[in-house]
Figure 1 (cartoon, protein in one colour):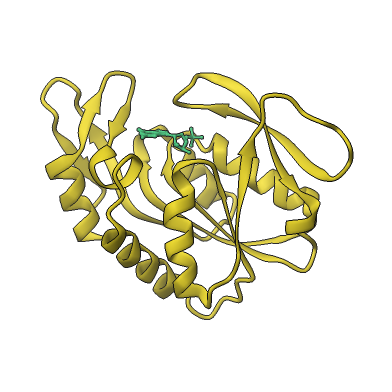
Figure 2: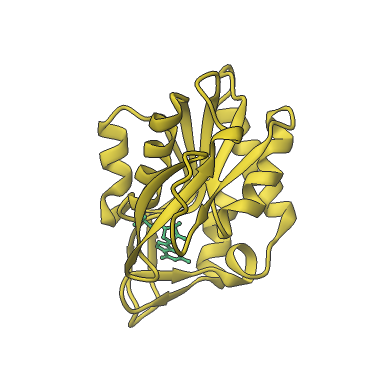
Length: 193
Ligand code: 5GP
């Protein structure tokens, strides 16, 4: 998606540790018109698939998932919650995710009330790096018996390999911008062609 690539080039900053900051339009201040264009792009890619629910992970995925839902017949958006501790009362699906940005593991939960075997799920997240967050969401869908129909990502960092692994696993993955390389010294960002 050219518009997203241009915004990343103009307003993104490359930090040490393979972190790309896009706070100006995606992760802190939210450009709703851009979110809308992203939702339209995913709707085009996943055209013909039955989607009953969008699943994302808090916090950054929520805004873009809600705007995207407008392009999928206003399906409900469920976000996995990052829990400090787990209350194992059986009402929740639980998995563990290693956070790229926080560099630690934490439990992630979704209530059984909001995901089940009849659901056909589109996973949405802002970034895809090593794929840990998405594998957590896939794990939750497996616990629920739900079908993962596809994955919509705003920014994939291709050089970290998580996306290619998911494609090898057979998932229909639509990343709107794929960063092939980025340099914290020069600020240069190259996209996959
Ligand atoms: P993964 O689990 O694929 O290794 O990392 C994806 C998760 O980590 C996303 O949910 C996102 O919040 C965060 N993340 C990974 N890399 C970046 C990055 O370069 N910039 C930002 N802002 N978040 C990232």
